[in-house]
Length: 363
Image 1 (spheres, rainbow, N blue to C red):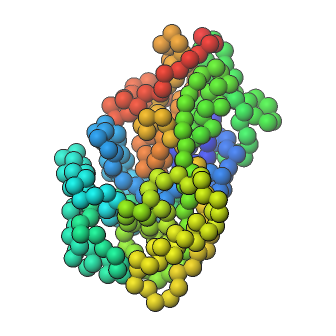
Image 2 (cartoon, rainbow, N blue to C red; image 1 turned 180 degrees about the vertical axis):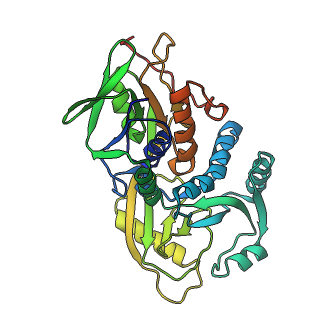
Image 3 (cartoon, rainbow, N blue to C red; image 1 turned 135 degrees about the vertical axis):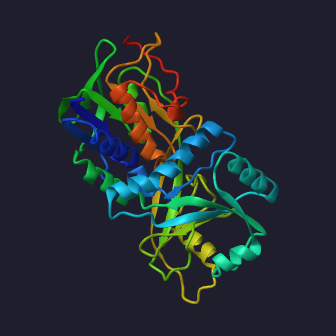
């Protein structure tokens, strides 16, 4: 492998850059219109929960659990970088479905405990609204998405350019390069990790790739003393405390707030509602909020791999990686994706995450 261009500077693109650097690649370049930490980037708007949950989809649960196992090893490789917390509560469903979810995921190898109200009160004494029962993912992690993205890029030694990519160049079933505002850039391999930008990029070579999205709001409070050692996903809220002491608060998980007229007021409301759940004497104050679109493949599963033309042949020179949640799936998407690019062998963990049926008029 000589020259790699990665389109997308979020956590998925950063993982590909890092894992590509472990091979003998002469040059790795990330092209992105939003640098790590930029509010336009999906990674900047992630809640940062790494978990193994996947409703009634064991293949996807296996992949998420493998990522959960790989994350600590990857962080150790990066050195001087740690997760913010380990273990997470959830009680965002009725007791019947909660018990079913716990039993199902334990049977799949996910270490999930059933926690009583008394146990919750002992672990999180600051909470004054407690469920009768909760699930607790023992190995779930909380990470600061933008920080880990920057660290992966730094350790990859790659070049990162803030530039808009408008399309791909294509000839005889081979993607040769990318079109940018400053001209065409060629490479031996183009990796597309551009989230919602995937649809327009692939349409430039007459491939129809459908995505959906939802708008997510997160409210960040001013820094506080330690109130919460573990993230919580409740029925109408989710909250964790980040590495700066801020509570990071969202509403119902994966709720779309696109119909909300006053976003700042909605963020204020989130802070007030969650504040009422804590025994804390001082006022909890909103510091800032983020609003971002979540990139969602149509069927909810990651799409990782080669694209096909309408004759069923793999299109050379291009590799796709789009998913939600990137913060959970990025490590192995990058590692196993690069293994496939280099060796041509597809790992069983990603074998079922084929790209959607495509229509290619250039074959």
